[in-house]
Length: 109
Length: 261
Figure (cartoon, each protein chain N blue to C red):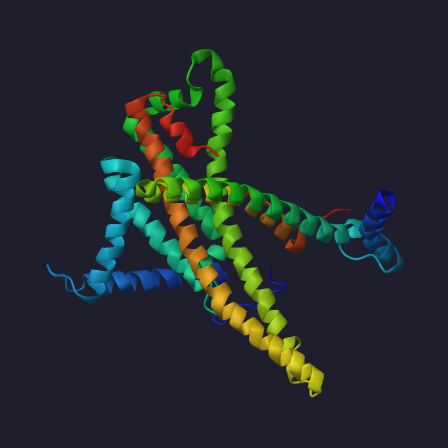
């Protein structure tokens, strides 16, 4: 089971290369299709882990706000700043994904 | 990005679009400021009243975060807030482009913040004292703290730039993809294709997508526009107050949790 799923993943990753080997070489060399996969997988991992981290932060902040409603404004402020700093890590990945997808100047060959 | 985004409707020849629309933001803000200050009254009405409320909010936030020492920086901070918020809102209007969806605009804003807070720190406490702050709490750790602090300070404008740019462009691409989904080659084209199934699926899908966009995505983007402007301004305040506060507290723990990430 495990081996077959690994083989499947290997096939999925190898497929653009195989498909491209049959066609005429596109701009960017044989690595170009893999950049799309890399952008998608990287963004997926970053979004998922960023969601986990932000969920922990928001959970702690909401708990603190429920315990101390008087300090809600300051806790909210700190939470928003913290969320921005966590989110910026996922945004870095988004920027790298955008570079991989859209910037034509990168020459992989 | 040109692959999936429609170019803006209005285009000055020989001029990059983000510069054109930065000028548009400047015209809007200057017009609002002119209308608000044309007839100043003791009991404000209309536009003057609205702008006074906005600037009072800025002032209250600054006093809350920086204390009374932050008062001189109200013009800088409020200008950043108004400019970035207006520019973010502009990218929500179909046919226009937001200046903040271009990396150059956000990098310019972040570099202004970077040089400003270093200049403020140097002016408040002198070059030697300000550089001493980079050395860390104890002298025998200075060789380790110096590179770490320098990298941390250099990462600040980078993260300010990329956060604003990434949030705006991410939302922009999301809307562009939705509009592609809607277009004549997408759901609407399917609905108009003539077949009954196509009309059913395409019509229902188009209605659902329009409801989702108008009811959820646009309010979400409004919230993100406000939040990103707020966060940019808030981090500016924290950086400036970190550069000022070192004079009073020496190497306390206070500025360390304010600026590091």
